[in-house]
Picture 1: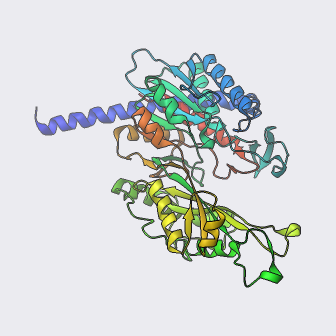
Picture 2: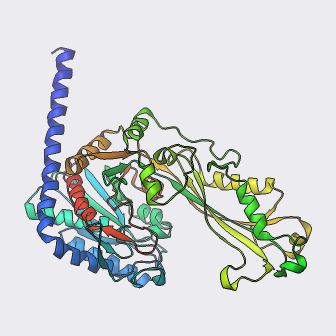
Picture 3: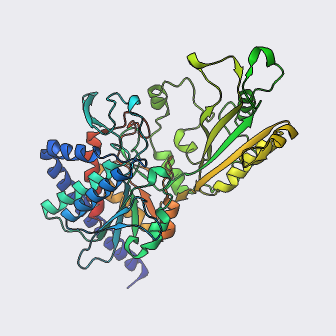
Length: 495
C-alpha cells in the first residue's frame, strides 16, 4: 500500500473516531439536560442544603461535615470512596476521593474541585447569614447567594448531578472516573501535595480536569490550560516608637505611612507596569497555538470597564487576556493609624502593606520575592526579617521588616496535546463555542497536583464571572449550574 493511501486511511480512521467520540459526548450532555430540566426545583433544594454547611478553615467541624456528606454522595452513585490524609496531619481537612471503575477501561479521567470556602464577615452580607442560601432574581435569572455558591461547590454538585444523569439514562462510560475534592484550597493548599504523594496510586490519571473558577465574561464556556502562581510579601516600615502629636512634631518626625506610600509609588508606573528591576525576566513566551487562542478569544475589556465603573485601565491599552500571561504586583491592603471618626491628629508608629504577586510560567516565586526585597534595600532601607530592635531603629535612617509567605508556582499545559484536543471536542459537543485560554488569572495548586499525579491539568470552570467569589454576597447564576452539569457529563463520557 502506498504512503499516500496509508495517510488517507489514517485520516479517515481518525476522523471517524473523532466523529464517534463527539456523538458520544454530545449524547451524554443531552442526557444531563434531559435529567436536570424537569428537576430544577428538586436539585436546587439539594444544592441549597449543601451550601448550608459552613466550609471555612476556622470551622473544622463544618469542613468535616462537608467531607462526610460528599463521601456519602459518592457512595450513593456507586463509587468506591476514601477520605485521604497523610501521616502527621491530624486536624487537616481530608481530600474526598471517589472512583468508578469501568470494565475494560484503559484510561482514567480525574475531576478536581474544592469544598472549602473563603472566610466570611456576616455583617457584610445583605442577608447577614452567609450559610443560609438566598434565592434572588437578577435580570430575569435565578441566582443563589451563599458562601461557596460559585467557588467551588457548584463544580462538585455539577459533577454529582452529571453522573446521576448518565446513570439514569443508561449511558455507558468508557474511562475510569476519579474524583479529588480538596478541603484546603482557600487556605493555600498547604497540605495537598503531601496528601496526594501519600496516596499516589489512587490519584493518578491520564488527565486531571480542574473544575474551579469562572467562565468567560460573555458566558461562553472556557477552558484554561494553566494558572498563575502566587507569592506574598508583607512590608512594615517604622516611625516613632509611640504616636506623636502631628502639630508638635509634624515636619520633623518621619511619618511611616508617607514613607510606605512613597516606597510603593516607585514600584509601578502610570500604566501599571512594574518598575522593580528584572521583575519580568524569565517569562516563558507563548507558542503559536496559545497566541492564536488569545487572538480568537472575545475582547471583553470595554464591557468590564463599564461593569466595574473604571475611568481607565492599566496596561497601556493592552487587552486583559494578554496581561494575564504576565506577572503582576498588587497591593492587597495597607494599614497605618486610624481613619474616620477615630482618626487622631497624630504621626503613626508604623505602616504595613501586603503585596500579592501573581506568577507566570518561567518566573519563580522566591526569586520575585527577593527582587522586591532588593528594591526595598535600594531605596535606603535596612531590611530585617524579625521585629526590629531599638538599636536597629536608632542605627538606621529607614527600617523595614519583611515577611515572605509561601509560594505557589505557575503551571501551563500545552494546548496541542492529543488529550487536550479530546477535552476541547467534548466540551464543544456540550456547549458549542469554547474560549481557550493559555492561562487563568487566578491561582490553583496545579504545580503540586502535577508533581504528585505525574500528568497534565486542564481547567474547566463553570461559575459566572460576576459571582463575587472571595467576597460578600457570593452567588451562582443557576443556569451556570445546569450548563455545568452538561459539560461534566460530556467529559465523563470521553473515550
